[in-house]
Image (cartoon, rainbow, N blue to C red; front, side, top):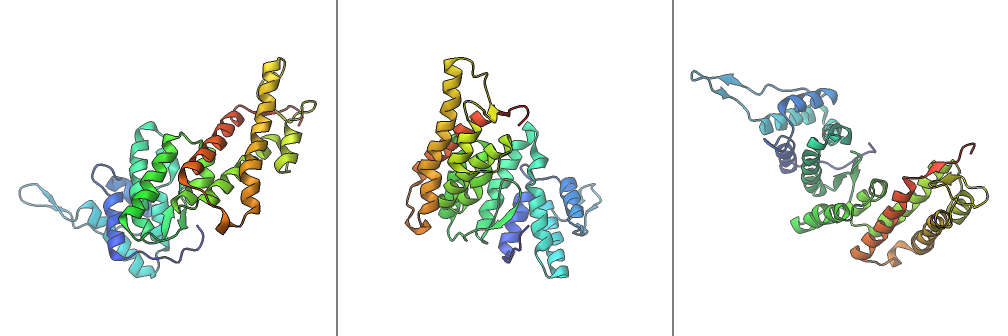
Length: 283
């Protein structure tokens, strides 16, 4: 985690505890206790006991978690471990099963709604990053709900989301498109083992006589045409998107959300072809 200078106010911390410890959508007390221990945050006494009628009394899960985090902040005079705890809560590796995906989406979106008011966000890799601070609820809804839903609705490839979600949360369309297009070239480099970029990379990798990658037998006219088509698609994306963005000052680069989603969908389409690509033996 890069150095984070932002802090959380009391209301923000309480809201986060209410989300993370939500009765049905949040984590169990056992799960929270485990994560607190992993982050070296002491678990405070929740004051639970049984009365004469057999009912358990004491702090609810939300208030208990809040007391744990406040005790750590007061002790260390730092939010560092609290931020580490939030990253642990949203570690995507903990939500790989289909049954846990809904919980992850709830925690991811609701946690980020609160964090945006503090100028923070947790991206899909579970990293806490500094972003532009939200001022209104409508702004938060737009940045978290609408934009995230738009990506899901378009079935954007995970490789594209990896590079652009953080910028999307900031509503930074320039960086979202630029980073996603650079990620496309990086994917080709990873598959081929080459280190070049742009047109030189694609011309070498998709050479008809000595290709570095393959996704079909290239024996029929249709197979050869499809292979060439992928190369030309990658080159077109760089000519239309990456190169103009690289040579245009950010302040002068104007576009709207719909066009950005179209661009990301095109890049996603290319990634889905690259999913089928393999490095040529001996390369």
